Image (cartoon, rainbow, N blue to C red):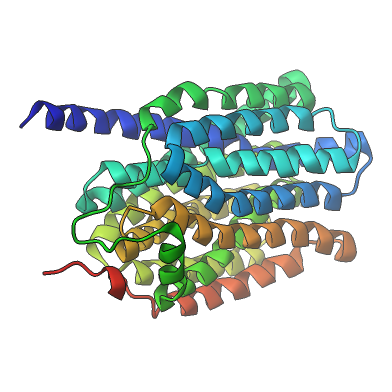
Length: 405
């Protein structure tokens, strides 16, 4: 092994470790944002729809900014994009604590946090992993990176509960914003641009790669299906704590439930990454969406108790972000790592459009009907539709970039 090869081999564990820490710090605070809903709307005298709209805008901006963040990372380097995103994300989080007008809250918690997350999220980290590891290990690496984001949820959900209880919701938002800034020194390990063109790859520009992707049926179906994941995950993240309180259960269980989702999603993400190396990824995705719908039907059919909430959270945790390593793995299989940050960015944009609707519609329908029931059933129907959409996807290279034997 040459000196260069030994250096590359040594750097891969460092890249994985720092990337996982970034995923923890970027996904953790955002996943705990729903914990602030009750205190914030009471302090400001707002409706839940105002909070929901800010969270919805955050998800939409995250998705809209993701393709551009991916393009910038492929062109100018991952570390620069991650650092810029961390600063914008942290400032938005801290300003959310002192925004007394809805429009200012929507700008801080919605626009600034959303765009910051687009540049500092695990999507950019996974693209860096795709460049660093061999094709045979990509699915597992994607699973590890996704599991790290879940670990962030497991850590920050109870941390958020403890901070709010000890220091109040405003100071807690500022503290979480400061923690996000730790992404900046960690991003140095992930420096680098998009993967170099392989000898057997066609000479493509970003525009040509996008044209090829959106002309490929399996990629389009993947984009459509990931919308549902965003709707389901964002609705639960934003509204499950309030749903728990509405049913007369201690608000602390909102944090416990989100922590359980994060804990069990570590298992689910790692398992999905391993399964993606052995079985067709599209079938695993179809199973996940069906299982989510079944779990939700069972949950709503039984009395809502502390025990049923924790069981539901644990089951959903296994199915939570286990879609990410499989979905990103399909993008890598179809088109290779060269423009992965860009192409997965557009898939993720669809996810965040779903997130926008899941969060906003949950708050809107709650204010209109007085409950979350209708949104739960919409989520169930979308899960069944997503399973149908994923089934015909091909887990194979797109024709124009198929590798020679």
